[in-house]
Length: 315
Image 1 (tube, rainbow, N blue to C red):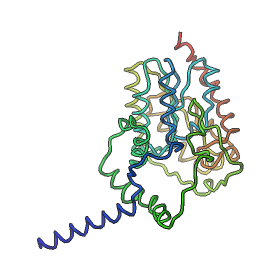
Image 2: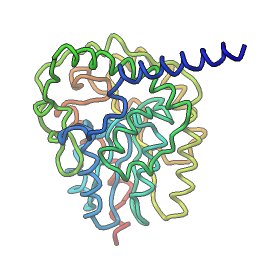
Image 3: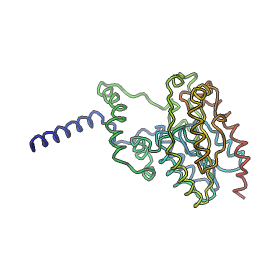
């Protein structure tokens, strides 16, 4: 029996080692290339540090860098603006911890998270960002469940094909001309460059959204309590969403909106329908507006912000 247990343990170690070799991209020693999309976090925080409070800080996933003209918001409100939105895969908890360590008393935080944004996010993605921007290591605490899920499921599926392709001599395509690059951001943290014309809209046919009570409500309420103690104003804004998907998911979104109206302590600035746009105004995912869509969303947002009289905060 003892020998069997030893053999099983040895076999398990061999399997893990093989997976680690095949999945060698999991924790590469080198930092990703300088134009990596996630490296924009470096510039966003550098820019935020240069701004005096009160500031408007947008917090959320990639619907924000693809959906807000921060410079125009700044000009309209008279307040400096930084767009911290980066990637939904980082998770709500990471984003709120990030803004906790960025915001100062009298700042205004506008949270615009994607529908049913996971609280935990991807541990693999958070480790990637930490390698690029070491302070990001303070925005999350790894859990065993996250590590196992990312290593044996998510990351293996993502990286194994790349590893095999690399062994065959294939080279990765440079991303410098892609919209998903650090160089596509402007200083405010908005994506403004390298949009390809007429990308495929396959995402409209493959999108899934099912209703369940959103655990992020509790996380958001805890953040609101923190913000109140620090004299930071917090608001919630629904993300941009395609018209056809909204029609097919109206019941699910309305249930979520009802829960938020009832249980969220943060003031909600709009309704889901207010952030619905024609499919043609989306780039290549259900949350990424193209430049024309970004202009329209910003146009709708400005009266909402000005109605809050947030300029008075700076007086």
